[in-house]
Length: 249
Image (cartoon, rainbow, N blue to C red):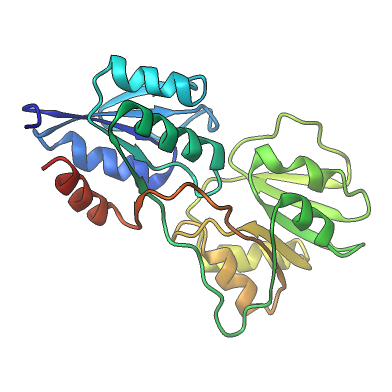
């Protein structure tokens, strides 16, 4: 039988993780802690307990789960955070608890989309045509291969500035989603963008850039999602709440 309050650890950093923490924190059945890796230096406020920093791989996470007597691990990290998801699955298995994944659905190609789908960041950087003006929205941690392309004009949008040097041929735009369709169309027009580069992160907060590219007949270099360990996965917070209840029943 479960304890009076089930202890849940959320590996967070996404908007879905924040909304899940809000839902769980007001439910007397659960005690929730959200762990952040520190990728975003100034995250939005999160309900419940919050810890920052890594665990030291899967073994460190397993030790944390056992020492804190965690009942359930929720993997709600970014769809491209492969190592974190791998560590979560391994640690939960070693600790003898369930690992559930909350991961928003990817975007799907629609009529009018001009996507060139590539396997990874390196391929995306190489796929930009020489002399193009590229709007790059892959985040600060993976921007270096694009900045190294001195034969293209890189306009890189991200929440926080990258740690690597920014060359003269590149421009950094600091902005936090969500973005509107009209704003995205205006940005593409004002910066005379030839191609959009993005990861297939999915979700509503940044989908306007995909809609803007479709409306303006702009080609998109789309980085496909990497494979992750197979665990029970749902797409919405409501589905996750139901899955948690079943897992802890």
